[in-house]
Length: 273
Length: 288
Image (cartoon, rainbow over all chains, first blue to last red; front, side, top):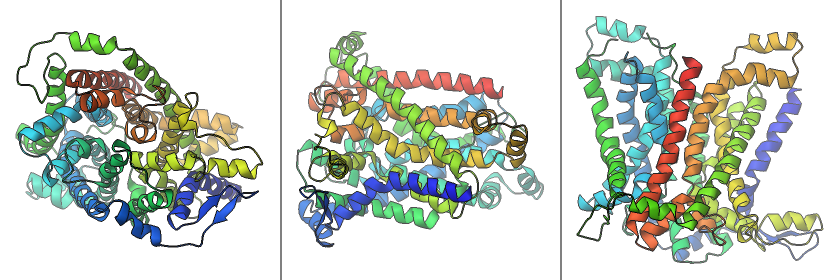
């Protein structure tokens, strides 16, 4: 029974990862040859295509760095502003607080298109277009509502005794947040950071409308290939895809245990103290 | 602990500044722009009443886009939830290296929507693709890429969305399934419940509120479908995969018709708001 389940999981995982494996093979020059019957693969493995990325898109490595920096800063910022608000929501006794929390999930589901153009227009007026700060702040704002929803669930699960004890000891609000609550939920906060990083890294529309080409993230660079109808050859495209996936895959490898503590908790009435 | 009004204010202030300034205010500016002739390049702004709305709603292309995105969401969201739940259900009991399986399964979600579009463009197409390779093995003739075919383009884009999001649904649902106490399963088994009964009577009631929240997120994402389709088909062939988000982008950036772009974008947001209101009501009833 246990073996059957392991086989089922392996089969499903294999099916989902097959397209990625195919791309990975193409990135190292192992390509399908349909002229043979049955089809087979051609080409010895090579790392040349990774070097070709820089030829097809000279600024690719710079874009990779831009993506990394903006996503790290944006993820930290959105979690930093979401955490106090999530705490306030979880500990408040107002009647509408459940609807407010769910409102944050609705806000997180709002299509970016609904505010992308005015955001670009307003950013231009305050000279935040084509700047790291402008893109990072916008990305952080877009992911913050989801961070509030997730962290609200995490704080809601936490017993209040620790905070009560700290209040008796005379600790102030921010001391309690930083020294008592944060350490207790550190794994869940780290997991939230990882998920926010992935969302920020993969964002297209926000960085796209906030740049005229000076500060480009990897997804924005990819969209150029559509806009200007440039055709990449497959091994180079595959290499670029694999290289831009690598940081996320490594992050997943390092944090897969921490991610076990990532859970969407549904705001219920039972955690009202 | 008891929070005072001042505490609330302090705790909410950073979030209010960030989300207010970069999300809520732009959204409201967009909303008010839908009633005017405002565009970033013009200097004279006039009140337009409902004209922008009637323009967009009378545009047959927008109708096509709404139809496409409705089909897209109605197909993709249930498939994502169903498939994601099924995988989570199998993973719920401890097996060796579960956190590794959970991590590996998450890989498709790490591919950005636009990178998924680039990737599947090649995987679907003739010489480089995976589809013709498999067909060749089976001794079947080569097939043309489904993204160039009016009949299959929307199905192909939905399939990509399911491929990318179903693993993420598994990732979100698994903690909920794992948290179900062991006695519940045992009781059901002792009562002679089939595996189907166990899913319906034990698993689903426990994860239903969670699935509702995940469904909300997925519906919002589907209704705003943009990145993958932009690069894969650009909305084509014809209008076969045009979505309201692509329509809006096209109006605002390609044909420089800003009022139509803002208005169609707000019509998507209104759709999400309606779904959101239903979500808040539904989950209120469950726990209330």
